[in-house]
Length: 83
Image (cartoon, rainbow, N blue to C red; front, side, top):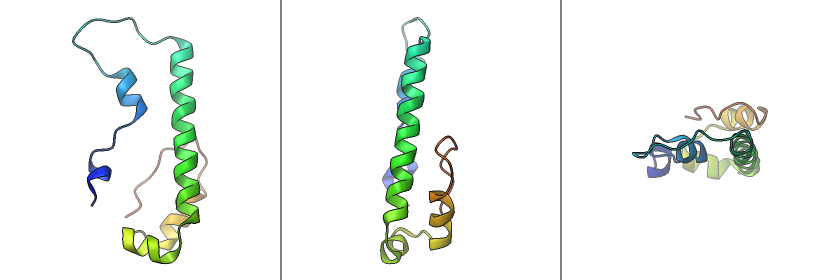
C-alpha cells in the first residue's frame, strides 16, 4: 500500500475541517465549487485508470476487472476500493 492511499487528502477535508477559531459555515457557492472540484477529480482519476495498461495495473496491485468496473462508474459516486 502506498503512502498516498493511506493518507488521502481531499478538498472536502480542507474546506470543512473544524478550525480552532470559529468561522462562518461555507456558503452555497463554496459548497458547489467543492462539489464540482471533487467530481472533476473523480472523472480524471477514472479516465487515468481506464487508460492504464495491464502491466501498470498489475504493478499497482489492481485487477483489470476491478479497474474496468471502477472506470465505468459515474462521476457522482465515490471511488471504491480497487484491491
